[in-house]
Length: 151
Image 1 (tube, rainbow, N blue to C red):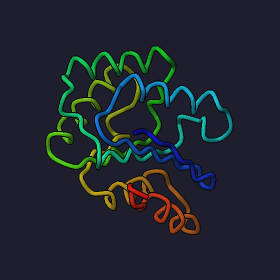
Image 2: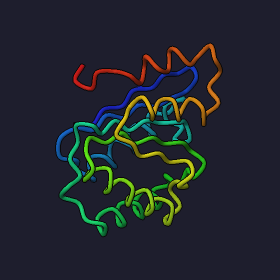
Image 3: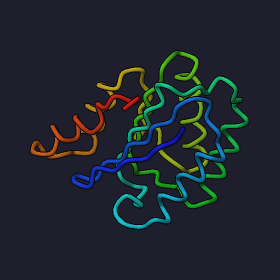
Image 4: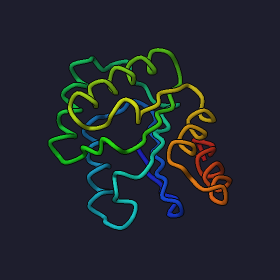
């Protein structure tokens, strides 16, 4: 399952991915959100990818290299965009770290703008600090991103 939500002020995106991830379905979801227009379509907005209930174990490095190249070819090269990936275990963590390297090599996102963690709180605080979210918007951002993924 793939879902997307957007907190308009201050412009933070939240993607939830669960189960066995289908890279084609993920790509289609990104394209659909971008095509819908509006602020949520701006792929340079800070984003948390909540993948605590996802399984990346079946992918190889080559799968992720091809996927990153595909993202770049479709115009998803927002190297200045901040992204935090929240994983559930060491296997998924390792795959996402490797994927982040491919994202940088293909021009999708720079490593210094990427966090991969097992802790949603760490991801939220990193994103708030790195995005420079003003004090008055930090509490709503925390509530927005500290959601129960099953809700």
